[in-house]
Image (cartoon, rainbow, N blue to C red; front, side):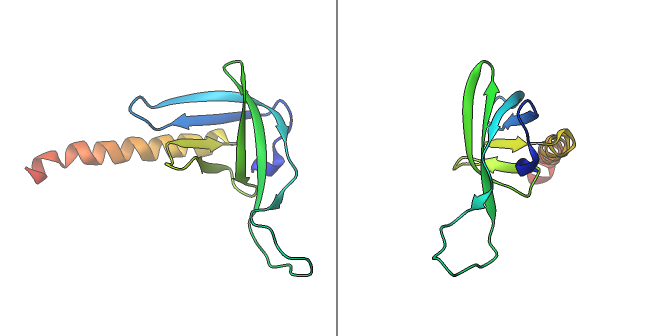
Length: 113
């Protein structure tokens, strides 16, 4: 889970653009979990908690904001082209899913012709 990351933990970044690639980064800081949306005082609904993670990737510090605190993997950005994971197994599952989806598309070309 992103809230359990500590300084020097490893984080995995999958870029799902025209040239898919995985990068690893080293966490430099993690904020305390906060509610995703502000709530009025005295009103305490159960809502999603988020954290901000700063990681050193390829020599640059990059801030990933509002990651779900209680998950191991999340989309980042508006277009979902970047997937972040605190777990190697979760990232491997995402890559396997992406590969299977591509294979299904390639194998269905003859059917659609």
